[in-house]
Length: 275
Image 1 (cartoon, helix red, strand yellow):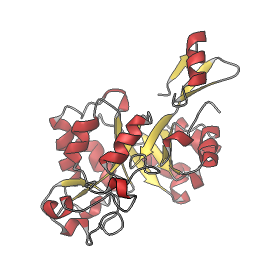
Image 2 (cartoon, one colour):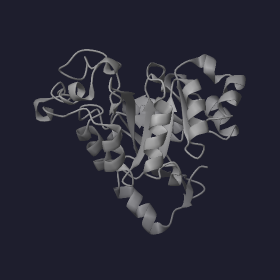
Image 3 (tube, one colour):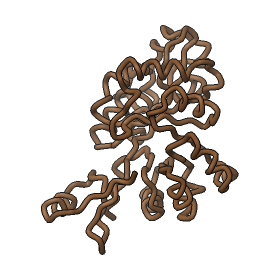
Image 4 (tube, helix red, strand yellow):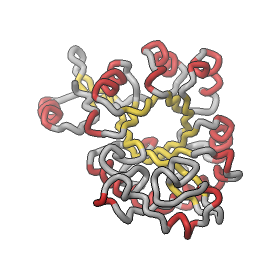
């Protein structure tokens, strides 16, 4: 359900001077629409992706959610990294699934972004949940779950242990490009919002969207396939829409104009829904 509020004089004044307030005033109705700001792999425009430094920066920049990518080490530890290999974002090489947690933990995941980030480590899923739940929302992407049989149940158990399987205000969302994985996750965690990711226009047909709506709460496409018609279709089926990945002011403004519910961005400060 969209969040809408009536603006009073004092709130309108505060909005004027708060660059991070995730709302904008409608000129004629006096209402504001909530647009969720999602820090993509953390504030990755300013810190190395999927590290504590990036997630802390996202929280500092008042993101409504941090977005994380979950994979699994050879010995079963859930770790936060985007690529299937560690090559691009660390000083190591190899597939995540083929490395033990000890090997993964020993990698430098920060110095590629700048000397000031030397020594940043790949965090665990446990660490992220314990550090940030209650402080900001967490958008959890299961990355290549087909490589990790049973990862859906493992993630579900971690949430259940922390009573996060019944999140308040949708502050936990799970998403993936793997639709079968999301169907399974929905059955394991029926009260946790589910999102489907795509950059394929074939997934925007009326038939496809109706199928997604049977188990998903969010349809999260790349911004290159977003249109007002698509947003309206998604909303008509009772789903929300968050789009990715914003790396320019122009892309942010386009998505605001399209009336999306959330913007997933490397640069949280690029999104000012008041403009």
